[in-house]
Length: 164
Image (cartoon, rainbow, N blue to C red):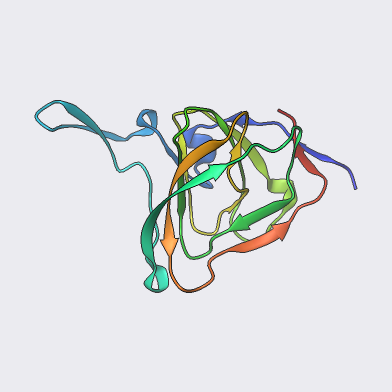
């Protein structure tokens, strides 16, 4: 089978819209002055979907270790019952790898290079790779769903890499 090579593209709200939301002040549709004019609120940056089947929102920190380059894509996952939001805390860019909702097709995988001030919110059912720190161990603030049921499907991927 021929090797599938992904070329990362810049993470923009328009390019990422089929998969979820870009979380950044630049992507804000609304800005509000609050706290007596001492704070700007970049309002409602992601469409969180966390309460299906008695789920509840939780906040966690994930610590990701970089993988060797070229980055081999071996697994993709999705959360059919909820969104999952990641925001970088370590001040470094990272890689986002996604595929559309529905039946998984490896030909539809896309890679995005996220800046150090951009987070992502994967919509429910969007296929994605786990957090891909690039140069150093990196922390991510994660907002996702907690419930006693299983909300993670995985699929193996072959012959796919990111040249970065």
